[in-house]
Image (cartoon, rainbow, N blue to C red; front, side, top):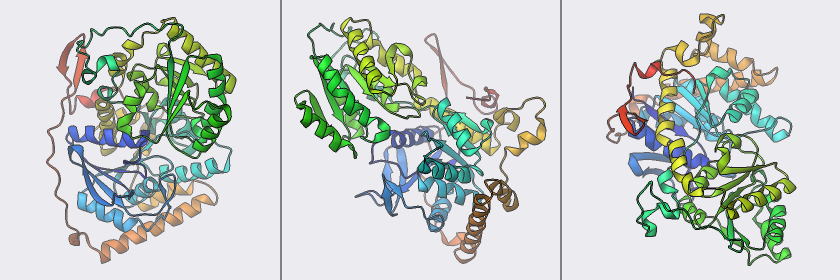
Length: 498
């Protein structure tokens, strides 16, 4: 089956980031598989209205007020008229929201369920349970996910976190990791544009590092507290003091940039630390290939796409053992540290020693990453989620059937659009919150009835769709031989969980 899909999130290009890249890459690969995909986000500076990107991807930039870190001000109901107009114009079947902190995402899922559309939510982040901001965010997530059809998480750690925060049935949550376009993150010796004519698979190993050769450590990150910038600021002077032939390249921007600059001035390290400031995503590869080690001192991370990009570029990765990071790369590509200053300095020293002794074959990383991660595979698995919530796959097979659970429990995972059933689900969200959520749903339903009566669908022009591509044929590689993957009913007999 093919679907008309709308991706909703506050976070999209031209802002760089993992969520933004995920939405774009997933959308283009779904288009390659024969689906129609549009993206709805807020207006960015210089970008308002409707834009077309590569592969016929249409983007709606809605002019809403941005209040913090590219997140729009929550309005709950004022977005509904625009939302309904876009949904009807584009004849959308499935609404797919991204990111827990996106107001557009939460409001879109609420309005989509009111309009009788199937919904999917992808969580890209980890949150705690103790501080006030996390408590409020978790309550908002509980409100949204009480009536969502399916949830996707980018790692198993992220799934556990989301299930606990929103009190979800684990069988309604699938794990589909991020990916990278490996061809865009090739090391110097694996990229024809660098003047190297060595054929793929016959790469010359990188030159051996001597005891006096300079090792460059690369950091590309938003300079925020949760990205471990304070940890980085404390560790850099100690690393440079212990290793005279080491230098840093740091790219990124954020509120912690001033603290980083002040540290460099105080320690007089400007000649050994190069600050590049904000960079575009297409510039990331050219920065990474200048280094030998990628340092990622995050305090919390659901996946960490940037470390996959770094490994694909042939960098040895030093990262903190937090969140879903240990699931991302095999151990021979990484050195892990606790999110503490002493351990991070020690782990970086181990990585430097490993490179100087030439125990790590970073020239093989690119081909290994290329085999591990593929956006085509991510799109195929996401498509199966769409098939499951739309009824193209048997419910017992998609949601999972276990003896003793019974037919009723399995059917309960299929969300009804009836208002009374929706109110029952929201009412169980808390003594006071449940009543508030029910009130919001009723108001949303009344607004929908008003819009249907006073602004009938017949007055909304249907947008002409970009010509669809023929559905892609999945290919399974087996010992160098390729054969087409069966689709349709045969695809539904694939394993139930991801």
